[in-house]
Image 1: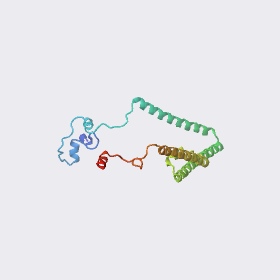
Image 2: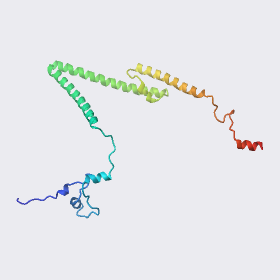
Image 3: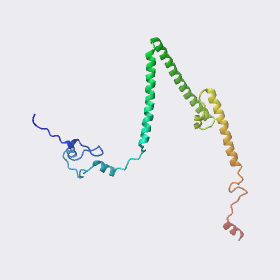
Image 4: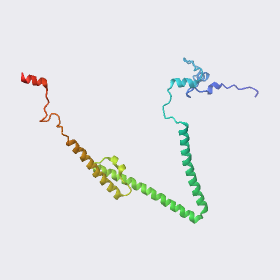
Amino acid sequence: MNEILRIPMQFFAEDGDGTQPAGAAAQAADGGAQDPTPAPQGDGQQQTNNNNPAPTGKTFTQSDVDRIVAERLARQQKQFDAAQEEAAKLAKMNAEQKAEYAAKKREEELKARETAIQQKELRYEALNILEEKGLPSKLVDCLNLTSADTCKASIESIQTAWTEALTAVVDARLRSNDPPPFSSGNKPVDAFLDGFNEG
């Protein structure tokens, strides 16, 4: 009991990058095999910085970090306050009122889910209609997806606007006064060949 147990502390040490032990621990881990490269001397952090380039990424100033943390805390505080308010409401209610409140809340959640599902279905249908009419699918973000009628009306208005814009661009290109190269009235002139033809 009076015997002192000596533990080789170097065995538990890690290299600067955290992957391999150095020194006596590396030799013990390898079964005593000699490593041809010498163990790193000095500060391991300094050596890893010389080998690896500095990480490239967005750096934040202290004011940026303070702002981000403040925004996050404000969001969390708002959620906490809403939960506390609801808990206070529930504490003041009797059993019948609690059941009524829970049913009302459940109904509101169901309506929100139903509305979300309806908008997804309208979006899918709008994508199909846009594809059928030959319009780009990216225009679906410009549509009013509140109901089927408003969606249909917005598709029709986008289709007319798209057709008018496309027609205007095509007409502008066709109105160009320059004849296309090498047409019947525009023959290429080559001075070298003209010299042969004359002589």
